[in-house]
Image (tube, rainbow, N blue to C red; front, side, top):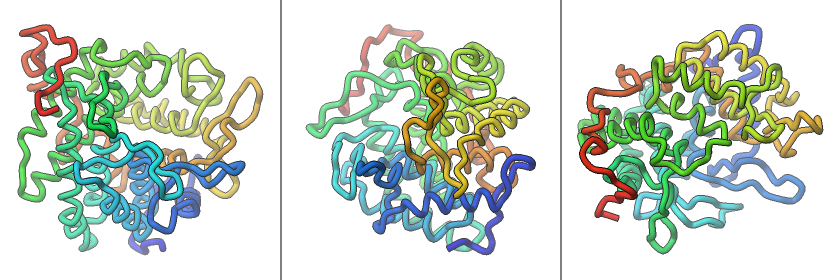
Length: 380
């Protein structure tokens, strides 16, 4: 059900508000009765899986498009599916857990979703009630995430089912967690329960993302590791411009979009739209608009989006239209439109610009004092 108060975004000459609603409806068409949102409906007999990060992104997109009842169903499912330790399983398929490990960026991203929902619906009368209802969920999720932070500041990517933490951190995941922590801090302050430790953890993490590539597993062939430090917020200003310039030719295919990985002839709509938001956040609106227009070749007539295009074989690859892709399109349109209360989410949180803070320095992460190989906090 679409909210009458909603005003879906539009990007003149590229997508209309009606186009955005159609794209959101393509997400709803794949939402399960429980409220969970899988990556895609069963394709060639293979069902799509659910993970908490992409589920939250899809819920945010539904809110932007005015489908708030469906969005709230998604958040209610997420609240009920959280485990006692604050995490969610890495994957479900048709309601059954298939990968039980808890990923740190999956857990943390609920804070972004709840803060976004509060921004978008707070004035409608129930945003405050929603935020307070979700606050225990956010608090447990952030505590789980920070339980995987090392003394240097990076956050290990997963805790396995047996309780063991993995031995490495991921740059994309930590960049996302930085934004999540900033949203969690803002939410805590808004609700009158400030969490200064979270803010310090975010500052430390932001510094490591911006200045310590050695802290992360090498995933440099993936475009997400290229643009996510900008999208998530740790890298801004001249550093952001340099980072984007350094990877542009490796990942962007003129007239087609952004590659998923640098060594494969495959562009994807989700990565392209995330890059759109990163460019917009970095102040490069002209290229953001151009890239957003370019990726529309992956739009289906029903408003959904093909996940990707293999441009050597000239076919859609993989052969599905995914909810997370549709969600990325909607959030990118909202960022470019710039009128919704949540449209600046990748630029500032609670009036404070994303980017390095005064605390994001070598002293804050400890790197100026002692070398640390894999300094996991003692609470692990």
